[in-house]
Structure formats: C-alpha cells, structure tokens
Length: 281
Ligand SMILES: Cc1cc2nc3c(=O)[nH]c(=O)nc-3n(C[C@H](O)[C@H](O)[C@H](O)COP(=O)(O)OP(=O)(O)OC[C@H]3O[C@@H](n4cnc5c(N)ncnc54)[C@H](O)[C@@H]3O)c2cc1C
Image (cartoon, rainbow, N blue to C red):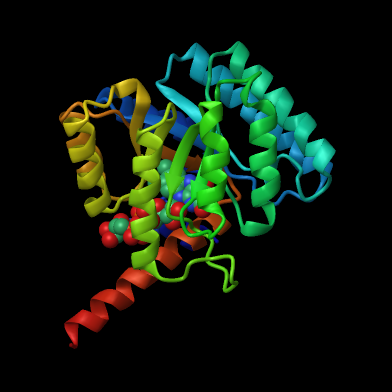
C-alpha cells in the first residue's frame, strides 16, 4: 500500500490534516482557494462515521482559526448514508450547523446514481436554513436537466461536474461528446438564473467557453468560480488565478484514499488509451 501511496500523492495532499493545511497554505499564497475533503466514503460502522465527523469538526475549526481560504467537501456515505438515512441527515445537520457557526461552506459531493435522489432531497431540505451549502450535479445523468430546473428557483449553489461514476445503466449518458454539450447547456442555464455555479472541470474547451461567456455577459465574481482537482492541470489553475478569476482546488486527504485514487486513475487510463489510439492511427 505504501508503494501505491507514492503514486496516489499526485492526487491527494497526504494522510493527515496537516498535509491538507500545508497544501492549502501554498495555494492560498497564489490566490487559489481550496475545498478540503476528508476521505471516508462508504463508512459502514457508526464508529467510522463518528471518526469522520470528528475529523470534519477539526477541519472546520482549523480553517477558521488558521484563516485558510478554504471550505470543505463531504460525501453522504461518509456521514452514514449506507447505515441509515435518518442517521445521515442528523450528522449532516450537525456538520452544517458547525460550518455555519465557523463560517465554512460545505459542498455535498455527488456519488453513484443510487444516492442521487436522496442527496438532492437532503440539499433541498437544508438549503433555506443553511445557505453555506453547495451540491455537486453530474452532467452525465439523464435526469440532470430536470434536477437543475427543480433547483434553480431555490437560488442554489451548484458545482457542475461531468460525473466520475461510470455505470453501464440507461440512467447514464455514455457518449462523452453529449456530456460535454450538456455541460455547456446547464452552464448557460445556471448563469442565466440566480444560481451560484462552480465550473468544476479541467476541460479547456469548456473553461474557455465559460471565460468568454463571463466576460461578454459581465457575470459578477460572486456568481461563479472555477474548480479543479488537486494534481490536475496546475498550469490552468495558476493561469486562471493570475488572470484574477476565482479558482478553488479540491484537496482530498486521509488514509482511505484508495477509492478516490482509483476514480482518478480510471480517468487517466482513458486518456492513456486515447493517446495510444492517436499515436498508431
Ligand atoms: C472540484 C471538483 C469536484 C468534483 N466533484 C465531483 C463529485 O462530487 N461527483 C462526481 O461524480 N464527480 C466529481 N468531480 C469529477 C468530475 O465529475 C470528472 O470526473 C473529472 O473532473 C474529470 O472530468 P473533466 O471535467 O475534467 O473532463 P475530462 O474530459 O475528463 O478531462 C479534461 C482534461 O482534464 C485532464 N484530466 C482529467 N482527469 C484527469 C486525471 N485523472 N488525470 C490527469 N489528467 C486529467 C486531462 O488533461 C483531460 O484532457 C469533481 C471534479 C472537480 C474538478
């Protein structure tokens, strides 16, 4: 495992909170904000969930005390969703309350499709009381058009992503080009409404489209930000910061890094095969 960790460190800050703080400080110095994720998805025991919560409380306090320009990202399965829905809601409420007290925004990551309805329902439940909440919405799901339309009248904070969970089911759009087109469509829709949108992608075509749209339509900075993952396209991250666009980087840390690392490797694998295909064409 130690051997794998060496490679995983490209995508994760490290196994401890201090590692995430260290990376955040470095990025904050060059005007890049962060969102820190304590890696603990699919926790199946209450002890594990309790530890996750404690780690999140510690993280929130650290962000506040050290005045880091950071918020946090969480997954509902790290708050006990695989154990009980009510238990998960209770834990999320505690966390949102804590975040509000310490003025730390909380983004709810979106996991695989079996959790989508519940995640959106929970976000809707808390959005009014806790405006320090953001939700990730995946463009590769067929239901997303409807979900966004149902959310926009609630002034949501939406992190728009292509979607990292590839399941071979009819609920998913498998064609990458269609997903890219959907991304642009939803982005325009969110810009045109009262929503806050986090443009969470490393796709330069989409980033350039968003920049043009923002400049042409004079979209205010408080209405959007770019978001990228730690270890991916640092050149663009820095360029956006240099050009004074709001940009935030997702920093995962913790001992349970394997599922996250596998998702990132799978994306890389596709890139690897893409390069091979074009080399031998
Ligand atoms: C801040 C943030 C939060 C996210 N939260 C969620 C979430 O809650 N739920 C969810 O399902 N997904 C989430 N994702 C992941 C997202 O859904 C995509 O899987 C991921 O961002 C890759 O898609 P892309 O938009 O960058 O486009 P792609 O077309 O996949 O990639 C565009 C370019 O980015 C670079 N790139 C992308 N991935 C890699 C990689 N692994 N290694 C090296 N280079 C790479 C390559 O240069 C590639 O050409 C998040 C992404 C970001 C940036």
